[in-house]
Image (tube, rainbow, N blue to C red):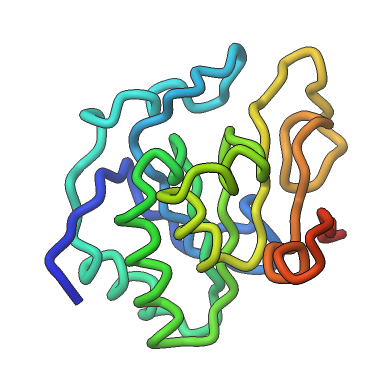
Length: 166
């Protein structure tokens, strides 16, 4: 593993809001989407985060053998190389499920080789920008009804979007 650093706001352990079950959530700094009504606008500036080594984040993640992992933010797709490296390290050391939240759509990510490399390392993608007029508090694990919860491996295999039903 290299000494790569990613800019993060925080790591939250034992959360249940960023996917099913207990999760360790890594909140990325930096987001180019600037969605009106965003619940985390302080995350937009990459300089608001702390440069943190992949090894340090991995140690926190692996300390809880029962929690799965979520990348959120900000937007992890804004730092795709670092988050892809972290995901590969998680895969090498555990069987944890990895979810990723992004304001980009699945189709946009497929068209971007840097982001596609991260996509290939995650299990579930919650995609699409938050759209305030489509906000729906009854939805599990998403803020607006345009956002999709996508099973990444099945979607990549089939070539058709396969939704994950929580």
